[in-house]
Length: 272
Ligand SMILES: [Zn+2]
Ligand SMILES: [Zn+2]
Image 1 (cartoon, helix red, strand yellow):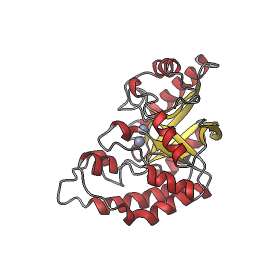
Image 2: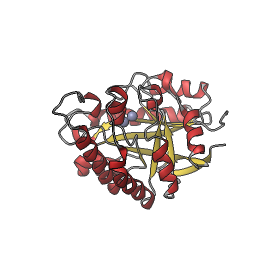
Image 3: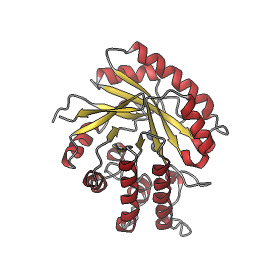
Image 4: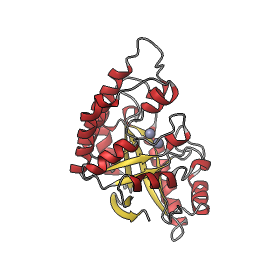
C-alpha cells in the first residue's frame, strides 16, 4: 500500500554522539523521499546532561533545526525535537531544559537503569546478569516516566528486548510484565501522551517494532489514540525506514490516524 503522509518523528543527526549526517542533508533526503514531515530528536541523556556536555549539543541541534525549518518551509514540515533519555533520573535538569527550549516534539526514553550502562552494552550471557529482574525494573521505570509525563511520546517501549531477545536469543515470558505494561499504557492515555511505534527493530535481528503488535493492540484496546511513528534513523539511508510497514501494522491494530507534533501539540493525520 502506498501512503500519502509519511511522517518520521524519530531521527538522529550528527548532533547525536551516534548520529552521522547533518540536519540540512537529512532534510534534502526526506524531501526527495517524499516525507511529509520529519522530527529531529537528537539524544539528550539527562542522567549525564552536564557531564557529557549535552547542554552544548542541545543548543547546537536546536539552532540547526530552526534554520532548516526556515529553509524547507513549504516543502517539508521540520519539527524541532529531542529524545530525552532517563529524564526522571534528574527531574530538575529535565524540567528546566523543557521550560527553556521551544521544542515541537519530545520523546521520552529509557536506555539504561540508574547507574547502569545502556541495555545494548550488557552481556546477557553473564550468569550474574538476571535479565528478568532487569526487565521488571525497566518496566517499573517506564511507568515512573509515564507518570512524570513531561514528554509527548513514549519512545521504543520494550527497548531491552532488542538485545535480550534479538541479539542474545534469551526466552522472555512477557506475561510477567503484562500488568505493568497495562499500567504504562493506561497512564499514557490518562495523561494524553502518545505511544511511539519505533521501526528500528525491523532492520535489527529482533525483526519486530518496539513495541510489537501485541502491545500496540493492547494500547488501542485500552482506548489509546495517540500514536507516533519513527524510524530511529542514525543514518540518512534509514530515514523513513519501515514507516510503510509501521503504518500497515498500525492499521491492523485498529489505528486510523498517526500523530504529528508541532509546538508540543498533536495533529491527527489519517493513515490512509
Ligand atoms: Zn532511544
Ligand atoms: Zn533514538
